[in-house]
Image 1 (cartoon, rainbow over the protein chains, first blue to last red):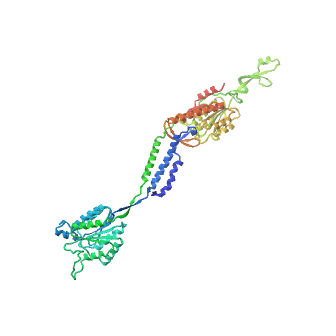
Image 2: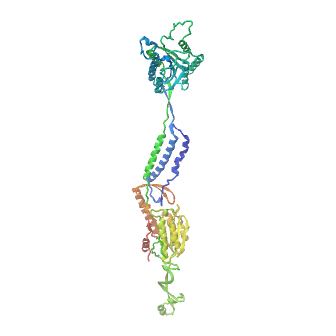
Image 3: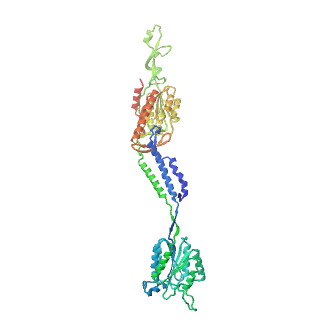
Length: 328
Length: 288
């Protein structure tokens, strides 16, 4: 099915018939044509000249109209998660892992460096996914919207290093991350990977908002807690708190996330290995096949039309070279 | 009086006895001051005492006085009847009408030299009153007309007016030089020539070598018919040129056959008018 970019140009198509109506101006006079014997080859050339002229005009006009086939949508099945990496950039991320003391992992590698390294690896593995990056400390930084350009994402992750502030505003990071989904159509698998080494308090309003949005957008949340040395574990069921002390924010956040109606998984990482395992687990879980439609652009036939017209004009020029210039 | 530049004198003669009253150079049936003895008549019947034949009078037993009678020489009207149709505008080095102008001026001059009245009638699809020169011995106007003719560019029209030309000729038997390329259907020509049978017609066939012999060697050309305006594309090449040449030779033969049936041997004139060739023609085809 051929479509045209400019349909109005087709209205000019009758112009292509002009060579049939108009005679060539540089015609020579001859006394009496009836006396000349019939010559089929001459008649053929005469006809050919007109047809060539008509076709040349026709194809120029068609080319101007911009013929193309319609864009096709091809259904593809693949791993096409939309993953937003929400990375904590608070100052504490520059400290080493809590597990560094236990003798595993690189003693000198900071949490943010290890996180960047492992996430970079993760991004590289998942070629079909769309990634977005949000960093946050005291407020969220909109780093990179959902994109398929891995180069940009890797650069964005690389830029997430550097010193930050002493605050962890998880609420702002999450709302910004969720907001990114709003602008992109749902691929069927939406994931937020929240990477932080602590937790902050979320106001009731923010809690409500994040839960609603996560539900509406059907986002799976993965929370990777990079434990601080001597910090409490969110999985410690036997944790006894002194009565006069408030519940630690990590526990509160974990409890809050559990109230989500969408999927939620929490991981704790003491060292780069456990972080890598957590990421590996996410990698495995987010392998749901998704259907998506790929737009295959229509084929543009205008250059072909112009090429044909150029060919016709070339032949006409060739015949022009054969034209008689002297008749005496 | 000097001849105009275009005029080249030729001499012509006629094969019949002229009946013109005006003196000229042609054998005539008119009695008068001539050298051609015709017979005797009684003085009573032909009262011209200068011509009393004494010998005949004395020999006559009845004492009649006899007078010698001579035929005078008379003039004969000469006409150029010229085709002004579109094809006459064609020409390689010079247009056919330029050659026709030469013929007109030459004929006017040659007629003037022998005291014959000269007239010109132009026709295309009709007889052109604006291209007409009434038969007269005062031929200056004819030279002007020839000048006009040389630069005339004819409209794209045919040559059907030939059938009315006879109405504009004198009743007297005249010498008619019919100048045309005769590029018209033979049936029409045959029909129209019949109307001119009263006169002595000399068909002068003007062809141009660019029409058939000097065609371009090779190439494509778009050509327009001078008369109908029809277009054709010609792919000239050796084979096609030979066929064109052949077609013209056949046409020449057909024209000759047609004219000879009317007892009007044609003279083919190509590219330029040669007065001697016309003189030769009269010596060849007109008995003295």
